[in-house]
Image (cartoon, rainbow, N blue to C red; front, side, top):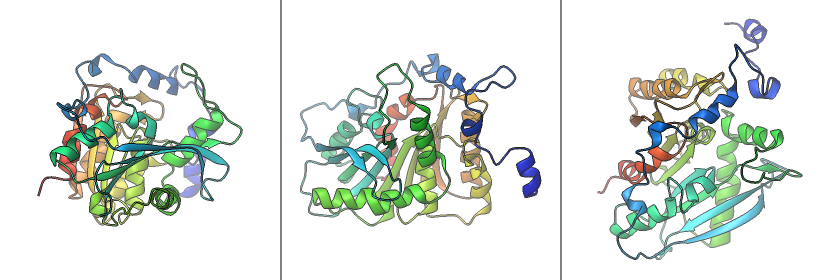
Length: 316
């Protein structure tokens, strides 16, 4: 398709930027709300490592609220939280970066990442890692909504710009701003080996994680995508073709979705994630695809989280 025809069909436009809230054929993108809590999620529970059998040495979580991006996302503020394991941190540490960080950090959430880290590190299941939990930016002048209310259009658009855009801006943000801030502020030494670094996210944060590693495999060699938005938001629907048609990159990729994942105007999440998995298989990647019964949330991902980490970093 030539560029003129592409634009004539409006394919260069971002639906939610120009047609937010519009219904098409009686259907709406707001139907994604129906996928957030489904009957297919009922049998998923946090993984065993989220319930340690005995007292553990507990890592410390440092919270940096209203942290400002120096240049890449100007005029935004966000919370960045950092988990530091309860061990000698003088050696190079592994790294996991989480998008929508507070969702993965929540102590009573589906993932409970810091408890899982504490438990698995104590057992020797994984090497000590630093966890960096990054929330999407909030434009200055905007405030987060109270529970039960939806965020403003400016907030959701900023999140989409950061997470759904398929360029190298976000990975540059992590590599040049967030990680240097963390290592300097907390006097940490994080490994430069991409095989010992992972990036993780759900929904738009899931495609963000994949895109960051795709753009810079020397930054992150491992990806965890929960219900990734490989749909037509800001071009992520093109990734199956790109994976198939590009020389294989040194990435290990975990992909998860479910039968009751979102299905809206922007696309079908179950189908999109199956296409990503099929493309990874076709191109010869080291990947794992878990397709369950649930919806657009972290329930199944939480059930599998300790297993996912063991798969990324199997015991030597």
